[in-house]
Length: 152
Image 1 (tube, rainbow, N blue to C red):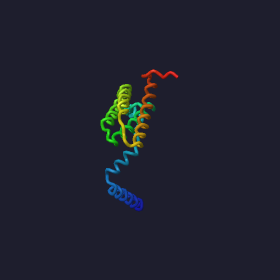
Image 2 (image 1 turned 90 degrees about the vertical axis):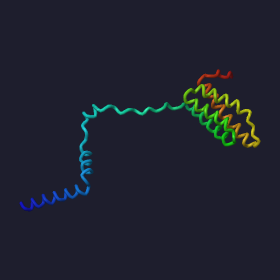
Image 3 (image 1 turned 180 degrees about the vertical axis):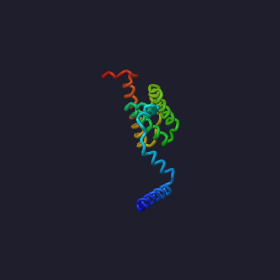
């Protein structure tokens, strides 16, 4: 009998020591985490709001935006800030009103024909970038049926 009382006191002292070392807040959190909420309470909780994601861009629109970004970066690096700004503004306009952005890009592409660069390698790179953007814009125009298809 005395052995049982001593064993109970030892267990109680050990539990108290562990409680003091962990702190009462940590023990209370651990006890709460053991209990699982009932499924009935979950029925009365309001549903979590879903995050609204913007719709994915059409692959051809992405191609136009990528080509426009490349050309604008190249133009800015070679000192043509105004044309670069116009290209970026037209590309940004595509987010809200895609046809208006395409028309603005097309107008800016017409203006780029005037730009001449003395370095032949730079001139070739400019023509390649302009050609890439012009092709992407024309493809998107045809896909949106904004321009009549070419007769073959």
